[in-house]
Image (cartoon, rainbow, N blue to C red; front, side, top):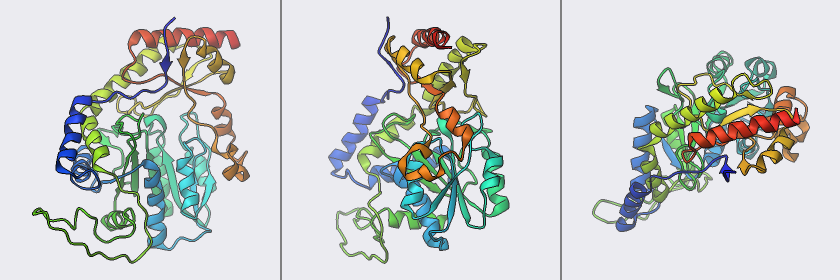
Length: 380
């Protein structure tokens, strides 16, 4: 018996990260400043997205992604945001936190938004759509973009799983109103926790920078000169939040970015191994990605019968898959929409996420595959 084999486990570029963190400690600047700006530039260079703003998490970024246009465009409590029930709850909490109304659209077999369901949910009160690139998938994204353009809707790309995902060799986010990435501890580009928000609009980017620092018009680093002098005075003209990132997390992110493409390539090779092992198995269906050679492959998901029993049986082999995600309409804040997305509800009780991380070798992938097949056959 092998194990334990966990679903996700970060591997850090430790020596490089320590070197960059040491620079922060030696300079005495560990908050927002040197490294946060350095990483913002590096991320824009990597993605070719025009505005990159480093934050404390993807979750706060999603809130800003809706709060900024809400304030700028005057959205009210009747304003609706079309979203998915198959996501981590922070996606949909951001809608409520911004004082807006979520409207759930169904997903298709890719676990991504079904364009037809989105069209059916549009009303005179619809203001925005949130697309979640679950596992790094870009299925239907082009069509969702078209729908938003046709209906003058603001598009938020929740790219928590999409660091390194591309479409036709261009990083995801191009042409989209706002894209929000996650660099949380087990993501493809892991830190302890942090994120990045990339607005298409320069005006919205400037607004986000102010709101993420409590509404203050100049941050502390901007008020400090190269000569070490400090200008204390600043102004506040509206309520903001403490959402900014810090240089320690940015230092780790800079180290991780150096290996991101190589790491994602290895993740894709893990998927290929699973695909070869499980192809043709009637009771195990891997979730397909729209651009398999360009997906970040944050998750490798499959649909199985008797999911809960299969998970418990796999634990006997010390294999610990995950579930991404429970149908959000089963949670109390969203209960009123329960049953509105039958495909999402059904799939949420059948999906598992197979182990996929840089510490996993092909022998372990084979062991997981063999154990999964045995377990599914037992419960089919």
